[in-house]
Length: 621
Image (cartoon, rainbow, N blue to C red):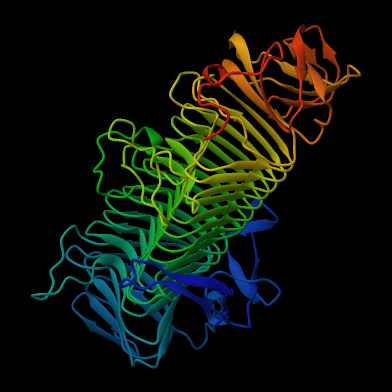
């Protein structure tokens, strides 16, 4: 079995257990493809996987037979379905409209049943290879296909064929039974490959379901379901394929084993996904890992959803344990959090664009961004976790409340997102008491924040050693561009933060100069604020995207003991989200000389020391 080495965390959902175990296999491999649908990151999104390649690690669990769509037509059993006239060939039993495969082997299935069922029921140690070669099965009072017993069933979607499975809106089940509950239902391991098309309509509940492991390795799969479109109890591993999933009351993709910490995961190693879900887009009971895929997800009516059931979940990507994203493209429009993990989230690459009715990205414990391009275009709070680490990549956040929030505690009955206040690990948050378990750590990358609440908000501490952070903070009182209950230590990088004088804060310490400037009047949006050195050279210019009366400027280039403050004008350097490094300033109005006698300075525009009243929140709490 081919799988990537990655941690499975014992989440609190798993019978109250906690801790971490490793899921390992030395034969980790990667896929090759016969067609590429899109390119994201450094890997091509593939719609058909034909082999496994030992050169690349997988998140999912695969065997060679899962991707092998070949078969010997001379020895395969031809099974043509025909209403009332299906022939009982060797290994097949026919009773009325129920066609049952009873022996291991390869079966090429074609034809149609207008009100019937295809069943696989062989010895537990035997495997069956189904070739869907243009088959249509409708069952008015049950599942269209049932895998009752086998070691594994591999289903190949034959080239240039469309295969259709439709169930009824009500099932006739034995007394006390609740299953089958899907148009394509399997009690056993199920794999699907090939480059044909499978169309499933799940009128009763689920579309495609396996009660063991589900592997999808190719084809075009279109599912419309009342409940979940794709559901694998133990795991869902997707290597390639094109998926169009629509649900009214359930998730797009779900793995739901909550009894075994090494199961209940969703792993995606490729494919193209278009998901419109009535609940979560993709939900894993334990871990969710994605690479080399192209996903478009909308939950409910997206970020603008109204009249939702607040005790239901409408998240874009959701993990009960750890979420890992290493490459791919993601376009998410979610009523609830766009990305959510009950433990940690690690983003090491990819392009993510998200609009959220609640949090853009939320992790109960740690959120780490080390690479990739992230744009949270709409959110209540942009990034939220107990510990947030920005180590690389480019992240843009737009939030109606806090842009970056380490620790929560800011949600109230009046101002909470539509799904209420989030829970966090660690100690208590909120208030003016510092909680050292809550941290924002910035060691690299570019972070641009547009927040109506606090820009950077930590119930504990903030540290910055590298990178570029630009905060376009609130334009009204009660919040600040920077807000922390402990300390804010800066030793490197560029920090530019603009907001009101109400609740204004500078950093609290560190080895790098940081200047907080209070203006006499509110400055219009896009008005440059520039610092020149004693030689008249422009060190930096900053054009906040919103009106402001206070700025914090910190850069490794600030090394002098005094600076000239200039307002307005134009800078001929290339701007990065309003930040100009150096350049030549034209026009502008000199407001004063700023003497800097200490590493941390809080001054008025004329160079006088700012009082607490002029600084709103003071010099740090």
